Length: 93
Image (tube, rainbow, N blue to C red; front, side):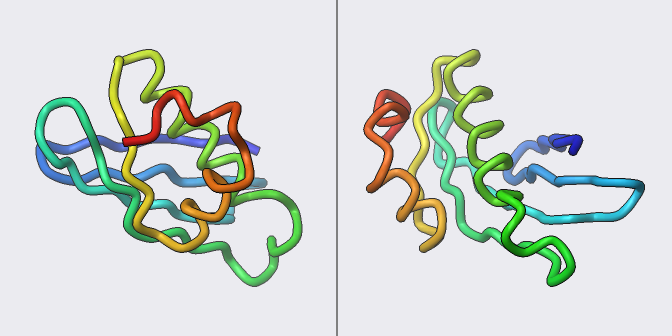
């Protein structure tokens, strides 16, 4: 599975692609220059149960670590992953 990112001045997203099909989408909004808010995670019905959301979130964590950013998980899915996984708490805002 390939996770691509598109980042704009105010918003962005991580998109999961498998076999040319969109498997999922995780959107975020910038909240200043050093943090972003994950506001929505959506997984295509055909890809449920395959860890698509988890892979997109881990890509967001990798992006935050690489760029010294913090993440505010407002999306219920992202918040639940942060609540369960202390290994990614270093990027939590």
